[in-house]
Amino acid sequence: MIYVPKRTRIQQKTTKSTHHRVGTVIPFPKTIEEAEALHITTVMIRNIPNQFRFDNLLMILDVHCFEINKILDDPADWSKFDFVYLPMDYMKHAVKGKMSNLGYAFVNFTTPSAAFKFYKQFQGFAWNVTQNPKICEINAAKYQGKESLIRIFSQKVFRCKNPDFLPILFSAGRDGFNRRMSGISIGIHVRGLPFTRRNI
Image 1 (cartoon, rainbow, N blue to C red):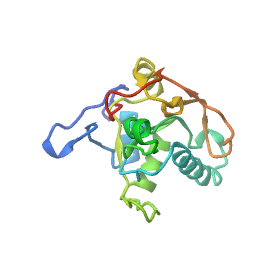
Image 2: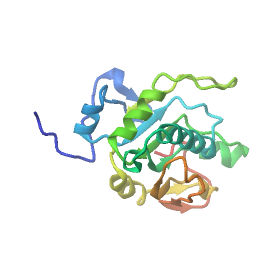
Image 3: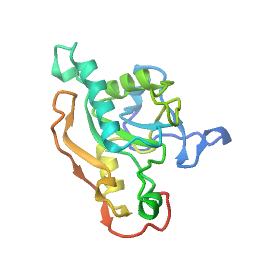
Image 4: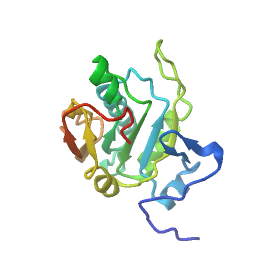
């Protein structure tokens, strides 16, 4: 058995086909054993319909965890998530007053098992929307784990009008049953016009 140490930044593929406009695409492990060995907990959700807002994504995550957890006896095995970031188009919101995401999001689950279960359900999932339909793709995020995400995003400046656009951290983790749990935003919010539509 090969021991793979935990790490906050995982190996990236550098072939042309793996590049995306928001960074290098890292395929999610195909087995739960590989996900656990690499300690993959942070997923990048791609091809999100642009009309989705943060509350829409949060509801999807809550429902997913609830459906997984309601059949499990031991809460220690429950799926939970503690970080969500849905980048929004700051420029469109500032200039036109329209809410539009950039088509991807980052979510950290509390265990590799929870991340893998989300991958299995949503990889190749066809969003049930009539406007801007897309096929969901789940990748492993470049930076892994809550501590790594806090370190990266707490130092980032978010120049936008709406502070609700910042990443949200749930200290205890949401599990589908505790949907009233409030989160705290992380990052440095600067109210004003953005320099660019890209924010990560």
